[in-house]
Image (cartoon, rainbow, N blue to C red; front, side, top):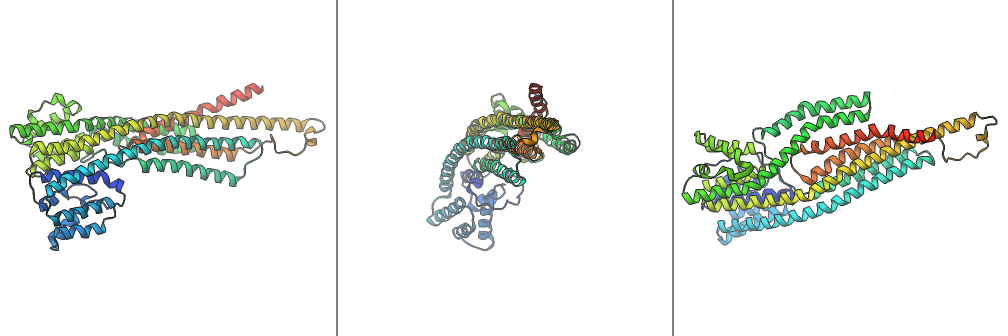
Length: 497
């Protein structure tokens, strides 16, 4: 019996090959494992359309055309290929149709296609990582460039007052450049699903979700009120502390999933080899492996063994195991392995196919972590430095403007009104700091949002990881806006005194 869930509605097709690449690789690996035992084409398609892959919808269309309208499978694959928006899917379906027409064995075709797709996916993944690394450097340069533009605009107020049109144009340009940098990081980062939630997910993720709805969201509302009633710095600090619990738990959960991904292939290969060597079922083989050699998987395997020994339906036991692990790679790998064995495949051979798929995905994610972590570590201190610099210069300009205002008033009050004899020059005249203050605050908020999104997009993982970087950027911006102004004001006014 299949260990998958009941058939679900597959998601709408995409024309983006990068978005479909991981699902296409999973789909082909599943079909290759299902074909090892010699399962019929109908049976393979029946089982594959139950999987929650974006590419499963195309095989569902092929199956329905063949079973309900009487088309031959080669013709059905050709018809569906014409409607497939993604070139990678269209090419696969046409090759499948050609293999059927030529009488090429489906098992050999699927195993070969899975191998080719794996090589293509690995190469495209590595190219994407190199692109992300280069755009990460470009993103840092964009932040510095935008900061310098804002700083120059702030200093130019010493010469003359900035027009509102110029401020609006500068603000739009700043938002556009910052948003472009974040979008590029998002688009060039490899697309993959990392976490899995079935009935709620792991305990730590459920707690993070609970804290998000009970602490983070009310904290956002309260931070908005504090911003209006007290000030923006206090509101940002409050928002940062509201995001902190969810962010910390999300970071811990992400590291836990990374460790489980590294051990998934070892676990599947061990169970498959034991089942093949002793000629037992998967449940019996699972009871014979040494849990202590499984590392971080040991507690999850222990609970799985207890459930299986309690005569609970195996599919329910494995569903609970996947839900507790909360890793999409574990979910897909165990489905490939268990369904391939259930369809008559040799446990060792099916386990090798599933383990190779898992190992390649885990190694690529580890390399992504190596590429994304330095970018995240660069973005955070850069954010602190840039927001601190702009806050410091803004306060210096305010204090300088205050000194100029006092000096002009003193000259105007002197006998003979000496200032009236001076030419009417715009240099070092009192200015309205409202517009430049608004521009600076907008830049600080844009940096706070952008520097929380960009590292998360580069790293991947659960959406809650935005809270992990968001609470850091909010606390840094709020801290700078709260602490730096009195220090800068005291330095200038104190020296003037």
